[in-house]
Every structure is written in C-alpha cells, then in structure tokens.
Amino acid sequence: MTATLIRLPLLAALFLLVLTAPSTSAGRAERKQKKIEEREKAIKMANMKAAGQDVVGMTKEAAELRSYELRNKKKKGLLKRREASLAQVLFPGASPEEYGQGEAVPAFAELVESKKTQLPFEFYDLPTCPEPSDKIKKRFRRRKNLGSRLMGHDLKLSPYNIATKQSKGCTPLCMVEIGGKKLRWMRKLVDRQYRIHLTLDQLPVLMRSKELNYAVRGYPVGFKAPPSYTGLKEDEFYLYNHLKFTVTYREEPEEFEGIRITGFDVHPVSIAHKVDNVKVEEGKILENSSSSSFPTCTRDSSPVNEPDTYLALRSGASGGDMKVLYSYEVDWVESDIPWADRWDVYLVGSPDDEIHYFAIVNSLMIVVFLTGAVATILIRTLKRDIAGYNEMQTLEEAQEETGWKLVHGDVFRPPQNNSLLLSVLVGTGAQIGSAFFFTLLASMLRMLNPIKKGQALTAVIMLYVLCGGIGGYVSARLYKFCDAKAWKKNTLATAIFFPSIIVGMFMVLNVFLTVVGAATAVSFLTIFLIFFLWACVATPLAFLGSYFGFRAEKIEVPTKTNQIVRFIPEVP
Image (cartoon, rainbow, N blue to C red; front, side, top):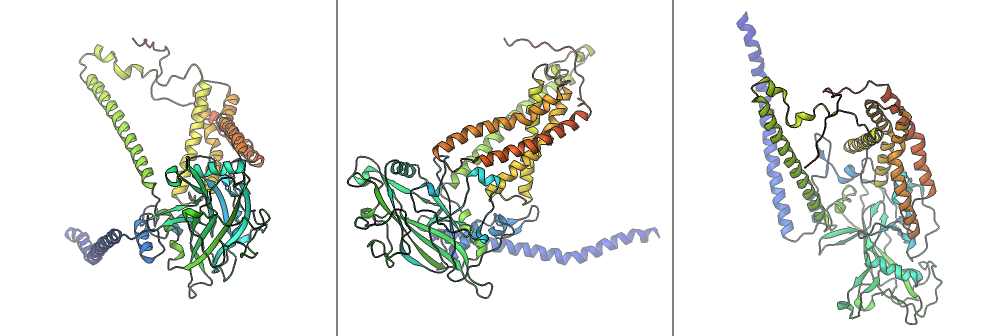
C-alpha cells in the first residue's frame, strides 16, 4: 500500500512531463524562429541605412525604417509588453478624424518659441495677417485647463485656408507694413532663432529634409546671413514670407469614408514680391481677390529661395516702412502610411537629440560614481569600527566607546532651536515627494499622458494640492516629537511656507513677462484660480492632516537619548 502511494505522485509527474514536452519544444522552436527573423530584419535595416535610405520621408521604405528604430517605444504594458502603434502609446483612446472632399481643415497657430531664450510669443504678436473672425467648430475645440493657461498654450485659427484635396498655387494672403520698433524686434527674433508652430489635425507642422535626414517641428521666422555671404559690413536678416504646405493623406474607401491626414509639412521661402505699384489696404485678406496684380505670385507659379530675391528685414529706400506680402500654397499628396504610424517621424529624433542622451548618461554616471564612493567609505569605516569592538578583551575596554558610537545617545535629540522650521521643511518635503511619487505612478499606469503637457501640469498641481494632508500630518508628528506646543502656528506655517515662496517668485516673473509681452504671462483669473486651490483645498487638507498628526502617538526612537548634551570639541 505504501509503495502504491509513492508511485502515484511519480506517475502523475511523468504524465505531466509527457503532456508539456510538445508545447515546450514548440515554444522553443518558435523563439528560435523569432530570433532568426529579428536577425534577418536587423541585417536588412542595416543594409538600407548603408544604401542611404532616409528615415523622415513618406515612402514605404522610410516608414519601415522608422518603425524598426522605434520598435522599443511601440510597446504597451508594464510586465508583458506587446507591440502597438505610437498613436496607441502616446494617445490612448484617440480616434482618427475623417474629412470629406472640399471640407475645410483648420490650421491652428501655437506659440512662437526659441531654444535660445525662455520668452515665447503668440503668433499674432508678429506683424502678420489678422486673425480670422470665423468661430472654431465644436469638433475641433479643445478645453483650456490650468496647465495650458500657465504654459501660455492658446490655440488660435491661423489665416491659412486649407480644404481637403484642394491644392492651390501661390496665393497672396495680405499686405503688412513693418517699421520702427516692430522691424527691430523682428530682426531680434530672427537672430534668436525663433520658430513658428502650427498644427493641422493635431499634427505639428514639420520641416524635413531627405538629403540631411532630419525633421524638426515648426519653421523659423527668418534667417541670418553673415557678411561673407552678403558682402555687407554686418549681418543681414531675411524674413520667410511664403509658405509651401504639403499635406499627406490616406484614402481607403473599403475601410472608412473620406480621407485621413497622415502628414503636415512646410517649406518656408523668402521672396521679395513686387508690390511697389500696387495699392492694397494694410492687413486686408487678399486670398479671394485677383492675383494678377502680383507677377511674382500667380496661381501657376511656385516661389523658390533665390539669393537675388530674398526679402531683407530693413527699411525702404526712402527710409519708410517696408512692405511685406505674405503668401502661401498647398499641395495634397496621397500616401500609403497608415494613420496609426503618422507620429513615427516626430519621435525618430532631431540632430541634437544625441546631445541630450549624452548629457543624461553623463549625469547618471556621476551620480553612480559618487554613490559608490560614499558607500565604500561608509562600509570601510563601519567594518573597521565593528572589528575594533569585536577585538575588545576586557569589560573596561568595552565600556569605552569610540568612533560613531560616541553620538548614538544624541542622534535623536530634538533640536533646541528652530524646531518649527525643521517641521515645516520636512512636512513640505513629504508633500512634494508624495506628489512626485503619485505623478510617476499615474504615468506608469497610463492615467497621465506626458505628451499632453497642459493636462500633465494640471495633474501635477492637483496632486500637490491633494497631498497637503500628508504634509500637515508629517509636520505635526515631527513638531510633537520636538515637544513643541504651538500647533496652530506650525500648521499654518506648513500650509503657506512653500506656496508663498513659489507664488512670490511667480508674481515677480509674471510682471516681467507682462512687460515684454510674452505669451506665458498669466491673467488675473488664472492667479485667482491658483489662490482658490490653495485657500480652499490645500490649506484645509493641511489642517486636517495636522489634526490627525497631533492626535497620534509620539514618535518612538530606537535608542535612548542622553539627558546631558555631549560636548563637541572645536575643530583644531
């Protein structure tokens, strides 16, 4: 009987082994085949790169190479990561927009920004054509949140008229006169490399070059030519006043109706249109008028960048204001790239991305090296002290403490001065750390999308406000450990200390931003909303956390604190 009971588990294990053997071998063969396919694909992509294939074009080969380089980013999930499109990763739940033949597709103007300065401006701060009076359709509206208001993101309709599958040649837009301060300001913008950002169907406009194999967002206001190029004594500044838009789309009548936009490119051109003998009202939209008055801009022509026809940013011959004719053209091109892969080109990388990666790796290496050095010193010191304690032979030697054990009775002694400041700082740090932790957790769980910067900043602010109870609780417990009694003063200081410093700095910066006319200057309504969040949400939560913190038991320390403070000798 006993032998039979012993054989039963062995037979069951053997039976399970026989059943799982085919599946195990099949899985092993599948993994081997997958590795072979990955190796072959890597060789194929390397050969394509060696042959000079670009990664920013709208061809099938370029899209395939982009998809291969972004294969690690096109994965969803925390533990079991599966393949997905960038649209699913970056914009979960987003659905494509379909447009009918001839339907107007609004292009929105965003900020005018530069990497050389932190002062963005609005598109209509520039001397350009006036903003259209048309209202934005409901399907294209975006809700303004607190984060977008603080960052100055305010989408406005651009003056460019783009309709589905309706290409157009050179179209005059409006005439503008620039002079005096505006002219000098435009030269500064060009010198500081400001770029204009537009969006179409939520796609940022791209400047791409197949020859140089790069794609960057936005287009520059103009460009600067050195004296060696112009032959002048100083740098000359030129303005881009003509835009060539290329809109790529995909059309699949069997899958969906209409078209889906898969790309939005621009090629800026600087051209001095012949406008001397033409009388046009300044700022008037000229698109629906006859274009025969401008020989350099006709329906059948397409301006190009020629050194002889560049538009220089300088006053007229008689010292008056310079006349600028803004124009544009639109070209619709059908493409095989699916809607889900239209974001690939934006994440392939620009020429300066490698510099950022090197800087991040360099910082991480420094942190790891310093952490290792400090840990090595601490471990060697502790080992030496512990070895010394283990070698003590007599009781008298054991009673005489040396090294770091000399201060074990004074480590947890409450501070005699500035206990309030210590409690407030620790409580504020706990609040900031908690908000930071919950923000990372929300990003990992895909509850927060970092691509949508306005929503992300709003979430960070709301999480900090909601963590006010944690800051009040930690501050109150530490203040109680210091045997202090002014709990109301501690709670109020915890609630207003850090926010008052941040708001004070913010108000001073906001004054300067308002003076220079920056787009990030915040209105009074936004300031009032921030004050409302602090006064009606963060402060009550801080008092609630402080209430529970003072009701809790006093913090117990692992070692007994000496009643007499140890004398610390002066450093020789």
